[in-house]
Length: 217
Length: 95
Image (cartoon, rainbow over all chains, first blue to last red):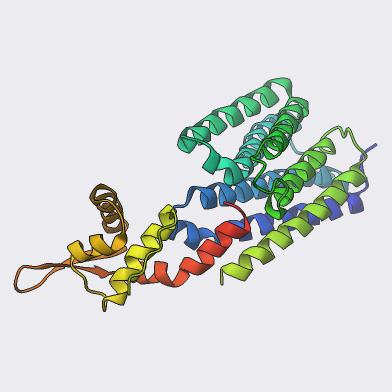
C-alpha cells in the first residue's frame, strides 16, 4: 500500500532540511579547508556534501512517488530507478567512506590511496545496485562499513578514549542513514522509522552545524 | 619572540609558528634567522618554506642592497587570524 501524500510530504520536508544542513556544513568549512588543505577537514566536508546529496536523492525519489499520487503525473520509473540506484549507491557509499576516513586518516600510512579505493568501492556498489535494481546490496555493504568503523573504534589504542563525542556522532549519522535506507523503495522497516530516523539525523546535523559555527564565524 | 616549544608539532602548528615568526618581526625577516627560529632541520624547513611560497602565504622581497626578506601575504595574515578556530574545529571533530 503506498504511503499517503501527507506522509510523503513530511518525508520530503525532512530530506530537504537534511540536504540543506549537509550543504551548510560543507560550505561553512570551505575556508578552513582552503587555507589548510587539511585531509581530515576535506574528508569531513566531503562526507556531509555526499550525505546531503544522498538525502536529496531520497527526496527526489519521494518526489517522483508523490507526483504520481497527488497530481497523477507519471514519471518514467523504468528510466528513473536505475539512475537513482547508480547515484544513490555512489554518493551514500562514498559519504560513509569519507566519514570513516575523517576520523581515522591519521592512523593510515598513505591516506591518499584510501580515497581512491573508496571511490572504486563506491562505483562498484553503484554498479551492483544498478544491476540488481535493488538497494539491498547497497544496504548490506554500507552496514558492513558501519561495522568496520565500530571495529576500528574498538581496536583503537587503550590509552586513547575510544568512544569520544565526535566518534559517537559519526557512528550515529552513519547508522541513521542505514535505517533510512531500510525504508526506501520496498521498505524493510515501517516507513515511520524512516521519518523518525530522518528527524533524528536532522537533529544530529544541527548539532554538528552548531559545533562548527562555534569555531567558524 | 618566536618562542617555539619542543613537543612534536603537527604540520599546521609548524606553519603557524613560521608565519607567526614572520609577523612578529614586523612582517619582514631574512630566511636564515627564520630557519633558526623555526626549530626545524634545514631540509624540513626548505620543504615547509617551499609550501608556504607555493600556497602564497609568504612572498620574498629583495631590497635595494639585494638582500632577500620574507613577508606575509594577505592569505598568510588570514591563516594566522583563523588558526585558532581551525585548530578548534579539528580538535572538536577529531579530524
